[in-house]
Image (tube, rainbow, N blue to C red; front, side, top):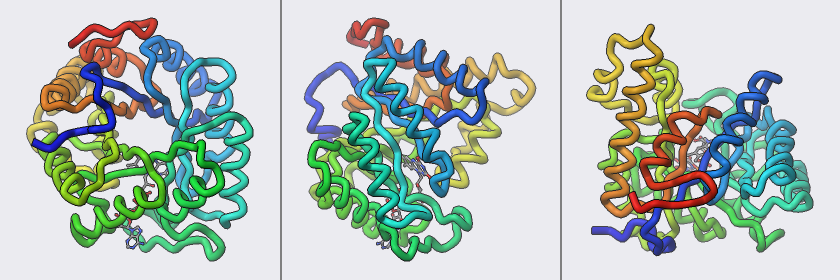
Length: 299
Ligand code: FAD
């Protein structure tokens, strides 16, 4: 079987968490309560997304800087090429570097006209994510760059070969890690990984795991991004639209099953799309052997 993440020899898993920058004071409170709850699990890093079209640039920056100042977590700032000239994007990277950020998740981003429409780069902007990766690495060799990966291929890719060409270009440009788009069928991840390894790409490819607090909302969101929601999964949430408590128990069972099966097959790094909520992610991390204060138990 394919070696899953050869750069990570440890048997105990690594976890990382994704947050999004809060829009309101209430969301801000929720995010920081979530961070307080999850931080003692000592994740390898925590990432903060960059709103479509760069809409959250300042909020992403503020969240990242606060993480640096007030926690011992290692923050990774998402950044896209959308809607800005290279000079502006470079300034964002410079500000991050000056603030002490040493990890960027570099992305092309979605078209400003909506997912599914043609992507038109800014006339003076970075044209591809690989261009952005290359620029960051050239200017700052001490910034670790993570990129995206698509177990179901990106919706714009003609086929898997074309999709993996893009991943290969990003790795050639200096990316050291990839995080996958959310997926629910582990076989898709393993088949994709086989293709990636067959291409000679050996960076860790972290599975992006999404505990679904609200199945209906999550389904509409992930489907737009090209993720398949299998019928067996939809059936598990059937009839629970007005029963949040049972939904949560079902979501915990589903995601625990997914993660434990991945771990059983040798996956050692997990990236959780937290949706800024702690409960399910804390429980699943516990199942993986993570305890507060960085303690680990073999799961
Ligand atoms: P890439 O991997 O660069 O390319 C995606 C696809 O576009 C390719 O597979 C290919 O089909 C096509 N393509 C790209 N370049 C070429 C080329 N030169 N020739 C032909 N085809 C090409 N979006 C945000 O707005 N903010 C975020 O914070 C954010 N975080 C994300 C984190 C992760 C882990 C993932 C998986 C996605 C994230 N996204 C985010 C979504 C992402 O911006 C979209 O999926 C976007 O459509 C593609 O960006 P990318 O960097 O993944 O693209």
